[in-house]
Image (cartoon, rainbow, N blue to C red; front, side, top):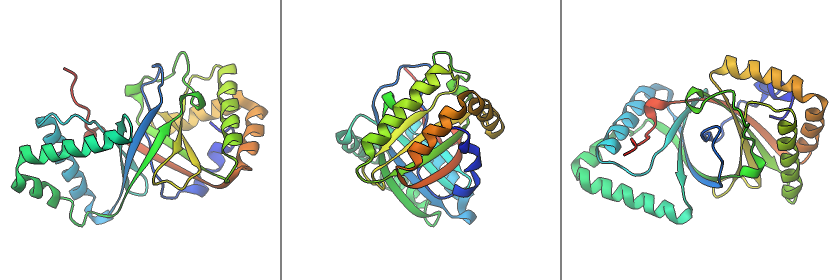
Length: 260
């Protein structure tokens, strides 16, 4: 997304930010709220942190914990955990589910599990994002299946106060442009909510790996042409800050309950 400037800006914006997930490609998208937990992990404690998360996954699977999460890792050692929730009230339900998990495990095992994370991370931030389907693009014939996606690219747009509606209209122009060119790689658009530096939004794109992603982006940029350049300039003029981040999906640290 965002035209030929995507790759040019990559190097200049390697800063810490939140990460998001993709939905299954080819499926109809619906409005979705996400709780996003971001851990800045100590470099010397990466193995210990990952071992602790793997134990969490095993415990949740054993006790059939009802809330799934997907895990992502960024190149600056941030570990991101993305939880889909129905609404803000559902977050309380998730915490209740953790209380029930603690009861099933018992106090001793629960505390032993928590002890795995002592000293493993410097910062933990929890924020909320909404997926906005009408500002996202889902191709009719996606190039990749959801299970092929391992690389994620995020662009964060911190919008000038009062310019949110104007920016949203530009997003819809992006969707129309992608549709007109029949682009086979989709993207999701999320709006930051509680805990984020509002007003802001982020788009998430994906690929099999970094090589696949950037090679396809080059083709997409050529197809979009000068129309993309024009939209990019319009959008960036409405921003007070822009950030870029890349990461990988971590299936071994994710918890996806088996279907019954």
